[in-house]
Image (cartoon, rainbow, N blue to C red; front, top):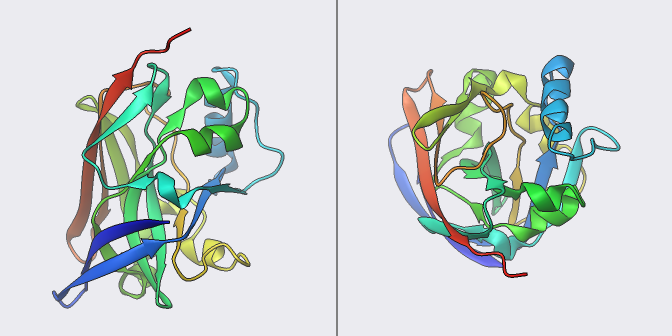
Length: 222
């Protein structure tokens, strides 16, 4: 399990400190609604020698201990990269919305996607919204990322399966559960970066969630 310090920003302007203990982590994969865009992402990974999924979507389990709010993460070698995703938390029965990066080792992904999900830390932002405050305009939320100062991902959540669909999966988000909701294709292809920043913007309520982290590369000793 991992203890997380979150700040809940409600639509009426109130802020609440949330002491969240994550006990269950799921990484949703292949969650694109647009089959062409989904095939594009599968092709991106295939170009790296990574096989496609057996079914879509897929709900990978990972250790909650992989969650982190650190400003820097350590990675082995130079073959890993971030992926901006919306994140859902079950806090006492209330669903909260945040942002995270499904940071993944691409070399390990060639041997098994489930294995790669387990190997890297999963950075999280510290600010969250109540799902109830954004559910009615969910598809208009904008997810983006920047890798080494260059735009890396950009799109609305209309490109991904709705949060309500993920929440409807039995056992996916129990009390203390966290689920990463899937990602969008990388602009110019998947690539590593030393710094990764990501944002979820709400154009209806005029607010954003921001987070960023850097990578400390560890040498591969053979």
